[in-house]
Structures are given as structure tokens and as C-alpha cells.
Image 1 (cartoon, rainbow, N blue to C red):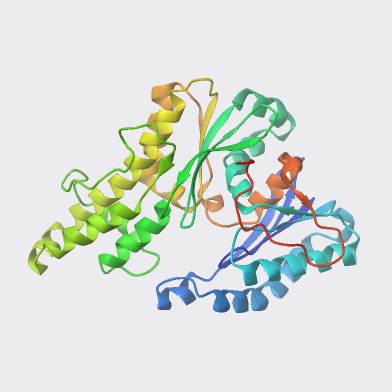
Image 2: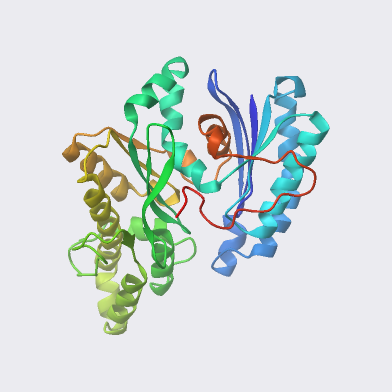
Length: 346
């Protein structure tokens, strides 16, 4: 089995994963209730919570996995909050040293990139390698609060960036838009809830780079457009149009993501489409990607809801399926973090 540690932001997560059977067990301690009071993540507070939560999580984990059953330890080594990463890496490094096990560092975004294939593996672990070969080249979208990246995986399992945001991430745009609307953090799911009651065509919000093939996303202008729209509305008008605004704003985010993905797909040669990251939990986006895959006659792999947010299972899985993309952390001393996105060389 592989024991994995994830601590890049505000989730303290551990997982046990076995290549022969898939997920053995997983634990995630969320800090949302704590940080919602402040309207966003407080790094020092997140680090303190990791320090309090990991000891009992690890105790629970090790009760199910004696040292003899572990083949390796995998840990997120970036990108993320420096203090949070340091705690996870320190614990993983100490554990690997004590148990004399190999230790590998996994880029957090590589974990998200591979996460849609976790359920594919779970359906038939013995046939997974051959099944994966039929799905490559693969075009995937990572969409979360901090990242919006369209990437490809070729037949040699090399990852390459195809397009990414030049400013705000899609999830960040949803959360900041929710804040402008007076909704509490995290606001993205609340916009989805309110938007389900509204008309997504009621307001015409912009879709950046929609009519050209520039390989980039942008959501800062969308957020500004929402602010100007709200400034023009009286309180009574805002109340009556609230659901329509939420639906239209959310649709603008989804359209921007789907439009750019469709443009890249039109280049041809793809054998599957994927969606992952926290915003992949949005039902409107999930349905839009299913429809996009159907229109392109491609199978669509979407990360399971429990693996869309930060979790350790995706770190364990990535360390197994993509060993060439991992980093050997067995050297003495605390390794440096990965602040950027090393999916490929720029």
C-alpha cells in the first residue's frame, strides 16, 4: 500500500491506497467552518489546525496499516501555502525515516490531473493499464479556487499545459462574486444553489477570449462586470433578480471553461476528456462537460465528488500512475517546495 499525505491548504488529509484494489481508506479533516468566519483561508490558522489534526489522523491510519503493509509514502510538495506544506512534508519525512520507506513528493496539480482516473482504476484494477492506454491522449481541465488549467496527457503519460488563467481562477471568481452578492465563504456552492432558481440568460456577463484561439482564460473582467451590474440595481431590484444574477454569473464561468476546452478539442487526436478540482463538483459544469464529450464522441472522466477537493487519495494515485513526475524526497534535510506548476517545461 501507499500512505499519502495532503496539506497544501486547509484540508488535513491522509489516504491508504493499494494498486491491487484501489482506495483502502481515506481521511479528510476540513477547516471550512473555522475559516468561514474570516471570509477566506488564514494561512497561520490553517497551519495550526494541521498541527492539531495530523497526530490523531495518523494514529487512526496506522492502526489500519502496519508498517509491513506499506511500500511507500507520498506527500504533496507544492504548490500551496508554505507553512501548511512544511507540516505535511515534515511529518511524511519523519514517518518515512522511522519506517525506512521510500518517500516521494507529488505536485498537487498532478494529483488533480490524474484524479478522474481513480474510479476507472477502481472498476477493474487488473485491466487499468490497458484501459488507460485507450484513453490517451487525454485533455483535462483542473478548475479550483486557486487554479484553472487545461492540460493534456500524451501516450507516454507526459503532462503539458494547453491553456491557463492569466488572473483569477474560476473558483476564485465564483467565491469573490459570491462575496459581492453578500453570500458567505465559500460562496461558489451558494451561487450554484441560488442559480438553480434563476434564468442563466437573464444577464449578459462577458466571456473572455471566447471568440479567438488564444490559449488562456480570464475571470477578473467577469468579476468587475458583476460589481458594475450590482451598483446599478436598487435593493428591491437586486432582491427580485438575485437568482437570475447568480445563474447568469455562474453560466458565464461555465461557458468560458467549456468554450476554450472545445476550441482545443477541435485540434483533433483526443481519446478522452477529463474534469477535476473543487469546482468540478458544480453540477452545471459537470453536465456541460458531459454534453461536450457527447458532441465530440469522447468518453468523459470526471473526478468523484469526494476527490474533487484537496484529498490524499489523488496524491497516492498520482505517485503510482505517474512516477516519472514525482520527486525523490529521501535526501537529508527538508526539500524545497514546488511554487510553480511543473506539468511541463514552458
